[in-house]
Image (cartoon, rainbow over all chains, first blue to last red; front, side, top):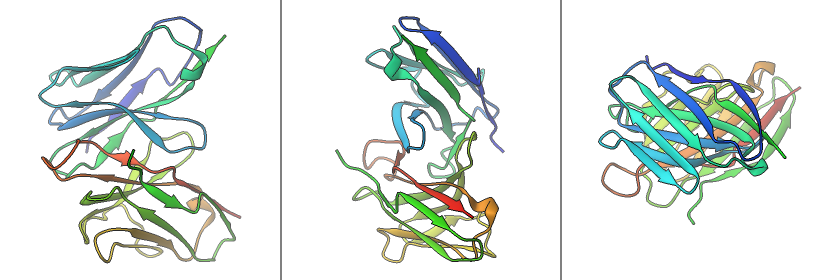
Length: 113
Length: 116
């Protein structure tokens, strides 16, 4: 079974800092890796998707990298803002399971002014 | 922008009662998923459909949960009878077949279920 771990579980930083959120997975035979954002009591918003043939993806202030051989992904958030406060979830799929996602528990981020 | 629609947004029900959730995936997405998210944890798959067929319901408590996607489009998830431990966020997601669209799963806003 695929196990996904996210570190740290919670992070509280002042506005303007550059952040690193970590995700590790036990089975390197993944197809896609997705990073999601979840606001309290809301659904999931997809931030970035990295396919197995790719090593990184960028969107605005967000950059995600993928190292399949070591079973790790990193989400970088540049110049953090209070509006970035949310829970960030990492999820992987194994291709063989037609897109079924295995999630970590998330990193709860608080950015204070 | 295409969205996954879910209703209701919130549901409060008494234990032993029946409850149902509805999901309408993005048009053309063949695969539909129901996930359950307990507070403080990541979502976990309950059931997965490919068109109208169930491809994975190994984590679905079949003594009380049922799911259907009769015409391969929208889907309903039912719980009967509801138990206190069923209180959670129920999330629906959809994704296209490989090679038929932008890859990855798109999630709805979820249904927050509280069983009292």
